[in-house]
Length: 311
Image (cartoon, rainbow, N blue to C red; front, side):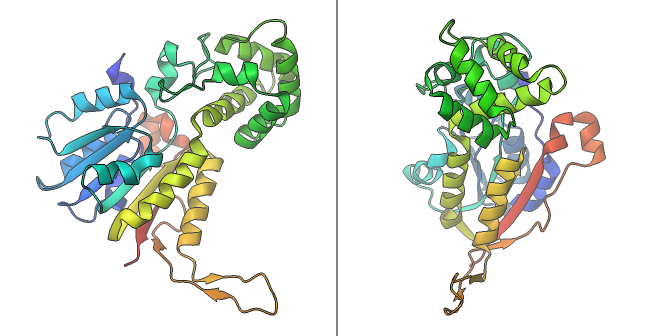
């Protein structure tokens, strides 16, 4: 494992500015990766402050442990999916936090490591599991899921226009030869969409499979719901997303949490007044500066949204 291949933290300065309200507080990095954001947060905190980092990938835990070894036990690393954030913190005696950050998506390490099977740019065994202890992988999905289910996955999670055609050809081809590698899958997509839009279609299909294998969107919704109750008053929730599906979930969650009125849906009934739990801090998503993009192209699609818990 190449520990250095974990990506440079995206929007690092912006994360620190929106997240930290008390330098002696407890913060959670829900997507630890190589520990870049975690290290920056700990450097900003006082010796009384601490950070709890979550990641489903044991490679990320190992990399972050090396990177954060000099912080005298103020970094607690948890090998778990962030969907379990509330229970995992409670097991460690932590019931309130000052802030939590999510940097969604896949790390450069996961894309570049041949055994992970995330990328269509090489010919590796299909896998795509962030947590390799789970049973379901992409190879199982493409070979055993029904054509209709694959078509829905390609459309729902990849927004791929040729979803039905790709699923139909895939279902036919796998009866002749099991699809085992990223190269086989890429060739199959090429046979359906041709060369003109190939890269975009491949990106959508591989994104869709990755999201489905790891249950990413449902896990995000679960983690967001768990985050608000454990935040201290004025605690911050910061999320960096990389595609419209993630960003839409975060935007809608913040909107509902900050709503003052719930429309009744009935012309004869009054609207329902609500007590909001969140105050949106970023009216529009924060994006990377030109300076950051020049040194970290991965930040190009990043959108940061932040909200604060209302006491």
